[in-house]
Image (cartoon, rainbow, N blue to C red; front, side, top):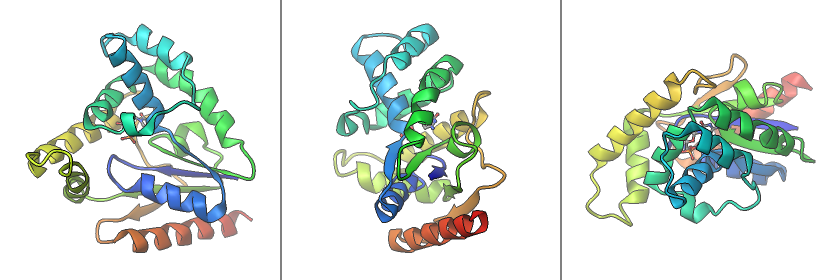
Length: 210
Ligand code: DC
């Protein structure tokens, strides 16, 4: 059983994916961490993010089991990940590992940008989680301002718009809603409401398929 959860940055899809995986007792893969890890490894090695061949080699050697989430979840690495994720070689190198993960039993939840469209088009349930850029920026700012009190909400909104633009307009596997995905706009929802709604939409998809 595969559940695909896609959506733009700071839409809340990561939190929802965790809750959905816990609810069903499924394995969880946050695929954004894979792109972040490629970017981080390149940074550590002093390589330019604009070197597609180097990024592809790093992606080919990436160990999915050794992702240091705390280190990868910074604003800079998120932005760098968005740069290297446009390279077809990087996406190709990460494809098989994601496909393999999706076969785990009793089931897997994968969250990202292209899970329902490219990685697992056969997923039994697909959600596309979104919210307005302003609301996503506000949520992200609330998280980041704890470490950086001088951070302005406006600069976070600019980051989000830049990431949306890059993720949606790249030629390979752009962020877009799959034809058979259910849309969940969390703009007016708290996390409890959004979680309930996510489970309701997934159950509706599963009962239609079963
Ligand atoms: O979800 P995130 O913020 O951790 O993702 C970081 C970047 O990685 C995102 O801007 C685009 C890229 N990404 C991708 O291209 N495809 C995915 N399935 C997941 C992330």
